Image (cartoon, rainbow, N blue to C red):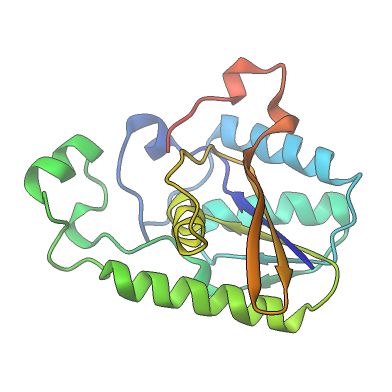
Amino acid sequence: MEIWLVRHGETDWNVEGRVQGWTDVPLNEVGRQQADRLADWLKSVHVDHIYSSDLERALETARRVSRATQAPITVRPCLREHYFGQAEGLLRSESLRRFPNGAPDREPPEKATERIVKCLKDIAKHHPQGRVVIATHGGVVRTLLRWMGVPYTSIDNTSVTRISVVGDTFHALGVNETPHLAGSKALRQSNG
């Protein structure tokens, strides 16, 4: 089976360089256009099911893909971004200055990894065949890639990271792919 991890479309906080985490920031106009282009591109690909974080920026991305592909959506809070506590809403630079070791009330990285990996394995178990799209967040995608041994990379808004699942083995087939944004520099801003 294949799992296609999709980072949500752009938000104003992405543009401003703010830490989002669990703060429920909606897509901006560019993010909606990115999600529509992703949805249009995915029309030509068979999608069996869509899973989404419960945060609006991911869920709106998932809804647009669902309308285009007719695949049902299941919302899973375990697909949320990492919780960054007091750092949420701050500019990334301010967050690093104030909390060089992370905000004291943040979700511990090992707990976030445990939550995210368990969620991915559960989804794979429920879909042993076919293709599943997961609308989620950049930190979630990077966490899963790190768990699979893939070096750190930037994850663009509405990028697709394709994973092959055979039994208990997860393997990255493609990382941070954005063919749906080709030819549109305005929609390809990298911010994470």
